[in-house]
Length: 256
Image (cartoon, rainbow, N blue to C red; front, top):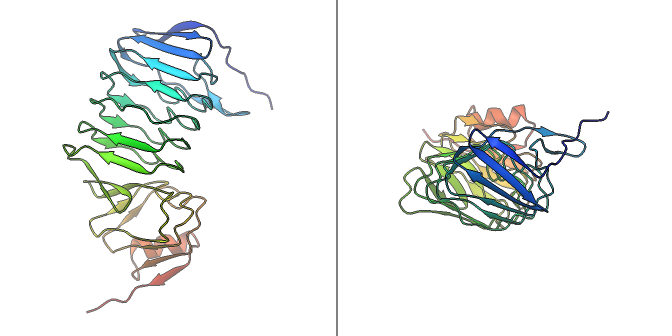
């Protein structure tokens, strides 16, 4: 089945007051306000944004406040981006599968990072979460195989790192650094939920120990995983999750 392929044009509008210009494979977006949202289409997977997926560099000028959903989805050759301090929101799957995207300066006023925003960004080694960020959705960093560090500003009151896991003060474990060499992970007692894709493709992780405090599991928490067993308590949410998803488990002893 054939799909309509977006026609790549050299310039145009991408928001009420936003304009984009493509110079070869270098994209510049200028203006003020928020960017339009886009979608994705298959065969091969790519963004529906008018600049297409062949860009190698991206510069977003000051005054722009948001990056639209799927804006740079599957831009496989995108390696360098410059984002403005005015940026507040990075949309859903906006940089999904930008395999060559290297580390960049995260805007100091950023507030939210959409779900799967940086999924499969294989060359991303480090990411800094500034004090202003209050929302990070599920899968924001899933399958980032070489992500070694998530650095959180000491002034950020919404998130913290513990044993290689990004955790929100709401109690949700959002992401795990899947390249970690450890084979066992103990979910901290203060965690109440585990977000979607949190442990996806954690190739070295064989055992996860889950306390009773965890009452909710997101979508495909262990997607394509190498997990060999969940250690949990009888009739806990983790026990139910293991049963429902055919994951081997070991029940932990309880003491009265």
